[in-house]
Length: 276
Image (cartoon, rainbow, N blue to C red; front, side):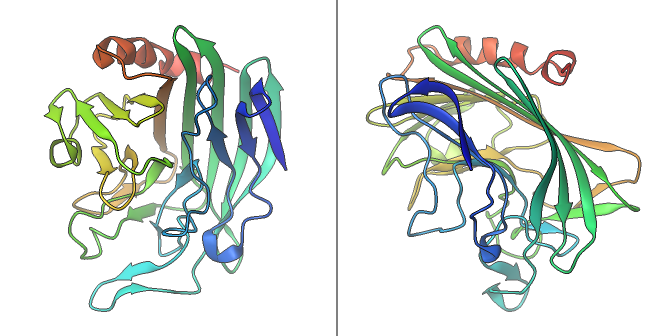
């Protein structure tokens, strides 16, 4: 089921519960969006990666379970289709104005809950466009949990996994605090990233300074702060892993993306984002 959170007609931001996602694509809720002018800025199930679902919380390796979908990179074997796909199950949902909050269970392929999540999504009109603020807090259900990526499993550069945004752009100009271009943005710890398509632009910000940007602009355009880069990340029992991403959707490329990002960073304050 898909619920419109903002806008009307063809110019909307909507949230899908993921119930119709095939098991091999790791079913999970996801968000789709357009600019205020109606330009699409998310892509769902594109031919090149059927498991890419707009904006979603997607992790390729949680103690061996894929919450990313599709193939898993196996050291010594390459990308391999395994029977290891998990699913996210919404157990509680509440909407209050522009804020949607959920409790979600991350379930392994053969049963059992791996992670418990508290999720908050705020969608609102803002000066010059729209803003989306997504915060997820993950806790291990039983004992320590580890997170990996294709890079930690042997595929250099492929450290994707976390809050991931797939665009429909065929090409994009990339800017960050460290400079311009894909080679600079990929792996950058810049607090912001600007992705300028032909019909719309995105300015993304995160407080996750220990999660460098995974960025692609060759083959497809997508991005997100990466959870596991050089080594597996360990989430000890009783502790919380916070994922956050705020994105401004604009109908034109901003002249000062850093200024746009400054407002987004304020929206990611932990006391604000999960106060509901």
